[in-house]
Image (cartoon, rainbow, N blue to C red; front, side, top):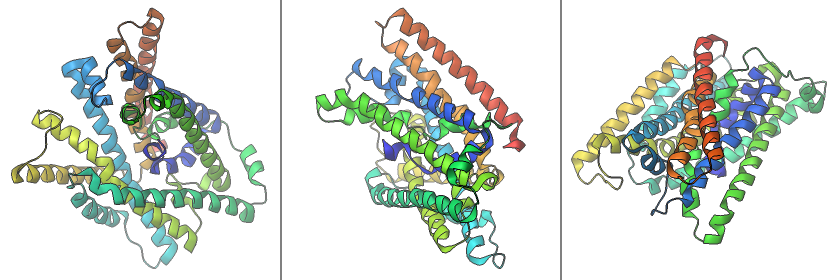
Length: 391
């Protein structure tokens, strides 16, 4: 759960809190947490296939229209990859500024091209087990990065500011004019982890452990969100209005800060192919219109897959060039336009379609939640787009 939820997106929270105010950011995270949790996992008792997934549930509920939801899931994963292509160049640019000052200025687009040259061949890998070493290294670097960011923030507040960290937190504004930008961010920070809930529960070996799964899910998720709030508030209070969209770009110059920026950049580069893998499989499977267990078995299929993966990476790269200075906006738009429907709109409808014996109260509540989710999706997406330059 922790690995599937806590990723680079946590670094966007301090700036998100600063843009919205804690009176908006904290409730938004709480709402997103409860929206992501129970409904999909509750469906596992209705069917017992070999492996139950979010996509499988959508196919059972919506039939031929399920491809829209599958493409929505893929869009969320590719969207996360897009933010990686914006985040890493910004991070490495800050590292170069720290190391060389103004002597050597390397444009962000150069770092972006270099990252694409690494990621394109990595996304050609078809056996996900081969990505395990990259995943392990990325986890180590992320833990190091998060711990170091907190340590540097607390040290900066203690040595560079006259007031204590608690006094700084007490003086933070409750509301900000661009508060609506955080609604999408609150859903994006979960990075589509709702799609992991059902397969994780199905993968638990013992029956008694599967029965304990919902409460473990709930407790771990609550702990993650409490850490999100703690991390965002500490970093925001330490750096104030100087906090950047990517938290690592806000760190003061120094060798320690540079190691954190480089470590997180490496972690994101290594996470990228794992993030892109399931989305690529979904898109390719629907394009080929074959069964889930289809495997590329000949050289023609392999080259076709690699060509598609390369073109998709290049397309994301072009979008990243256009949006390279708008990371916060991209995060907000992806969360509202793609993340909110996955969390709020589809699961209640799937529950109504698949659990026929649910009470009228539950069914009406599901329709209500889905309607609210649809309204929030449209409103938050519209607000983000129409106020793009304010983010």
